[in-house]
Length: 241
Image (cartoon, rainbow, N blue to C red; front, top):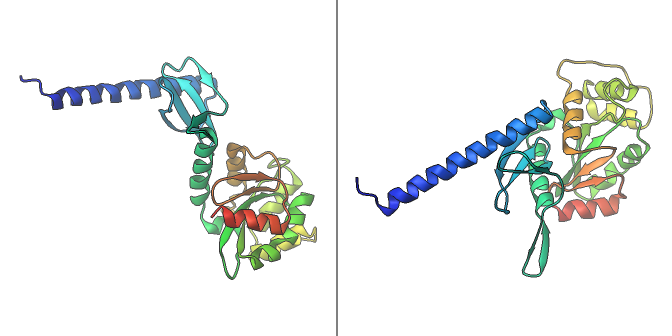
C-alpha cells in the first residue's frame, strides 16, 4: 500500500483522538474516585500543552494532567500583546450563560420590563434583608429597561423556613403577587406542588458557586454577589448585553 501524505495525516489524527479520549477517561476516573457525584460537563485540551481543562456543572473550571494524576484549581491567565486575560473566568462566564439560558421562564418568577433592553437573573431568598431591598428596586429596574428573573436559593438549606416560603411562592397561582408578599414579610398562603423547581435551583446555585443572596447574574455570565443600587445595577446590566 502506498503511504500518501493524506494517509499519514489521517493516521496521526486518529492517534491524537485516541490519546485525547484516553486522557479524558483517566481524568474522569480520578475525579469520580475523589467525588463520585461530581458532575463533569466536558474535558478538553487547555492552551497549555499537556494540561486539560475540566468544566464542571454550573461553570466552575479545574485543570488536570493527561494521566489524571495531578489536579489544579485556580485561575489561568494569558499574557498576549501587552494584555492580560483571565481565561478561567471567561470559560466560567460562558458556561454560566449557557446554564442560565437552559432554564425556562416558567420555572422562574419574572418581573418583566415593558420596554426590555436587558435582564438580570437573581438567586434569591425570602427572608434575606438585601434581597428585600433589591426587590424594592424592581419597579425602577423595570423602568430602566431591565427585567428581573428570580431563581430560588434558600441559603439556610431546603429544610429551612425560608425554603418553605420559596416553595409557597413558586407553587402560588400568582407568583409575582406571592413574591411581593414574601419580600414584604406579609402573610403568604402555604402551598406545595410536584412541579416546584426550588430544590433543583438551589442545587444549581451551589454548583455555580453561589454562597449568599442576592446573587445577581448578568447576561454575560458575570456574577455579582450582593445588593447593588438600581441605577448602578441597571447600568451594569445594560453594558453586559
